[in-house]
Length: 306
Image (cartoon, rainbow, N blue to C red; front, side):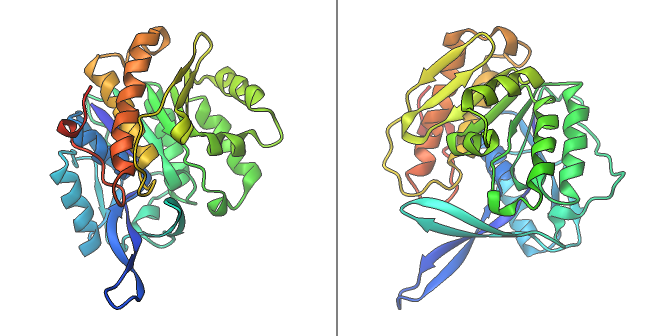
């Protein structure tokens, strides 16, 4: 079973009313939430762990998880309101403004401990969950705990405008790289993480800290996989891009789904190029469907081949 740990929120997507006025329409979202939804639709055995509001918006999130065959036993209900993300689109590319202080996303205590499922084989962390003043410490503790029991995939999904203390977050990222077996980053994420270092030096640094495999998504230029033993480039799947909301989240889901289907979670150090390519290709095919339609709307397995 794959356990996705992180934020669930409502994306406020821009729309134009019939009279021409601009507005926003709510849609379920959150980086880790989107990955869980995509995994469920692709047929993976997946559960979701987060704090979700008991309000009407929170119920929409729970309904969406159930409809996409995502287990919700690890979800904890909060009386605080649902967090929001205002989505702004320019030429199909999304930027975000988050409102999560005082919401369910931050309803964690300093000593809070989750109940972990017994059949946990892989965990996924990422998104703005890692940045919150209460959620960040909680999820980093949980990542360290799970990292002793099962492999972890991390997608930090860098949002520079949401990072209040850059030096502290860079130190926290280094700590997380030490717990993550797989790191997924976009090329833009990697440039931010690199800072004044070269990309090559940054990749070597991350691998030294303990990460076994780094996946770098490059949009239309495909995906690069880097480990101490492998350097592999896999082309992207052609797509007519409507918007990029949820693309990276869907790629991560496709990649993890392929590993689960091949029972490879215990073999990350010995993945062959063929096995790695197959997993990347499923992620790319799934992401190509997501970018071809509005919002984070991952495909069902029957919509893609492979």
